Image 1 (tube, rainbow, N blue to C red):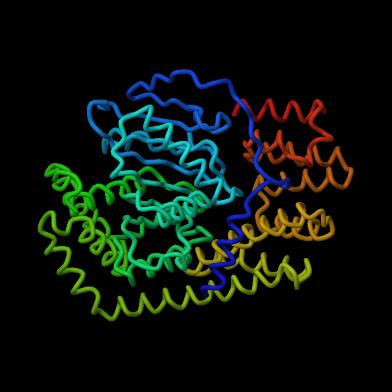
Image 2 (spheres, rainbow, N blue to C red; image 1 turned 180 degrees about the vertical axis):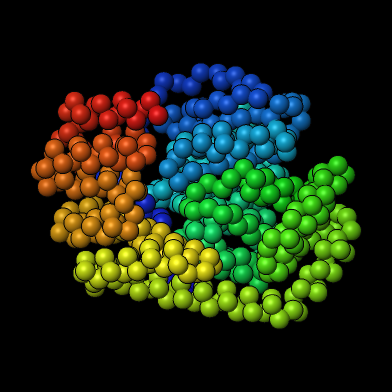
Length: 464
């Protein structure tokens, strides 16, 4: 199982374009940026490297006379402005400065990631008053892996919120000094990986929390991110790193008490026990958690809990066994096998119990992930025969994924089929592809960049 997870992590880190490297664009010297409270500055260019920028949001009560905790976001596509915009209400709620890298993204070497992060932080401390003891990293997908790697490699990170991907546990030799929140959607193809990481953190007695929401491989909803940031705040109080906030403790206790009542009415006992464990984790040492602890002690010995845990273990084993089969099938099976297998999984999504249905949804997502990696690799190597095979699988397992059609455009250009390339690129844009920089710097697109259709696609994407 560990070897499979290691392979998956390797696939995530090769998320890049058909070409190699990341283009550096020069900018004029940085002007003095005025960062206003309650407003997002979408692009502050780093003094150390003017091709790198970041977004910043200051909470409404920001005052430069005191030091402020900072959350730095890493988006897998280098769109740091997105999470800053999406979660900005939490910055004001918890009195935290939010920043998001517009440069760090999938496909970068860790050396480049470290350097870019250093550039960002060096610049940020010149712009705002930063509490160096409370720097938190939040990442999605490949961005979560990068955030985790930075935290493991330095003693200057107070906590990590890893969304839809996590740390390479083989790099963690001792109990980490930072807090760690793992977030995953129920249908996220990395769901089982996040469970494994959470179990590992439990085994080394790390300060950690797993949060699961009802979604896919995506930035989590605001409600879930709120729980993650709240965890960091509660842990900071538990460790006496910040003053006790009686109002926040009281509101948190009420939140868990009221939500527990809802869960007890509509959910299974395992979900209820996990929620009570979360309440204890957040509130221990700050207020009386006896009511939650007593319910945990009662529930954990019930036959229903044992049965539910056995069911989870069984499904996890089946999921990992199926992932291994899927991995091997990319190089060993023909399209007839793939069509039959995908149709079977889609059918089972509709007819089996919910916990099994989401497993098959995750397996389809996993097949999409591996399709991306194999297609990307074959195009970079110029192996068009292999690329054709992997693209057919990709389109079969994930027909609405814009990256598939972006790769098809690369494939058609390399096959001297420019008309088909432009049609595929147009479809990629229609399905949600928005990485203009990637599109403009794609080596494979040099032959079509002056075409009027290509120019119109870029202009149309810029308006989104």
